[in-house]
Length: 225
Image 1: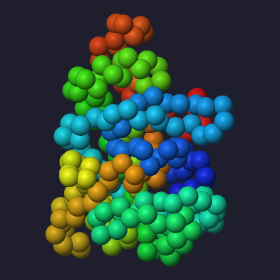
Image 2: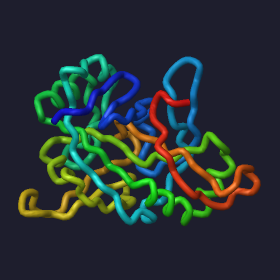
Image 3: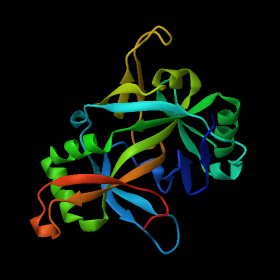
Image 4: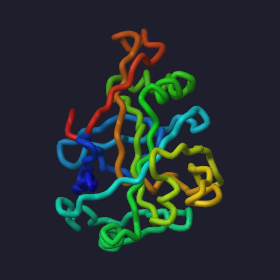
C-alpha cells in the first residue's frame, strides 16, 4: 500500500511527519541543534554524528509513495540518488518520474530510540556536546534515501544493515539471500539524505550542568516546535 506523501518541506509516512530541510546534510546518527527560523524550513544544524560502530541494530525497508497526493513540485531541487551503490545527482523532475515509474525506490534506514540512546550514552565526546547544546540538541535516528530499484530490493522488509565508515563516508551492507544473491553495499553518506526524523532528548537532570546521561529519546516530528 502506498502510504508516503512527499511535500516540499516534509514527508509523511505512517502518520509521522519527517523533516526535509537541509536533508542532504543529514546522515543516520547525525547530531546537532534543531533550528526554527522565522522564515524558511525547520532543520537540523548538523555538527557531528554518533560513530556507526556504536549501532548494533540498523534496519531498512522500502516504502511506496502515494502519487495521487504527491506532486512533482515536491521535487524542485536536485536529488542525490544511490545508483550502482554510489550517489549520483538527478534533477528533481527526473527523480520524480523515475520514482513514479518504479525505476527508483525510497528506502528508510532507522535505529530504534532505545538503541540510539544506548549508542549516544556510549559516545562520551558526543554526549558531552549534546549536553552543552541544551534543549535544542537533537539526534537523527531515521533517514530516507532514494535508491535504484534493483539495489533497493536488498534493503526491503526490515532488513538488518551493517553500517560502517568507508573511504567516501557511511556505507550500508546487507547480507545476500535467495532473492538478491550476494551481499549488497551502498554509500549512504552525507549528500544522500532525502528526509529524516529527529529524536528529542530526556536527560537525567533538569539543569544542563547536572546532566550526565540520556534516559529517553522521543520522536520530534516536523511541524512541532
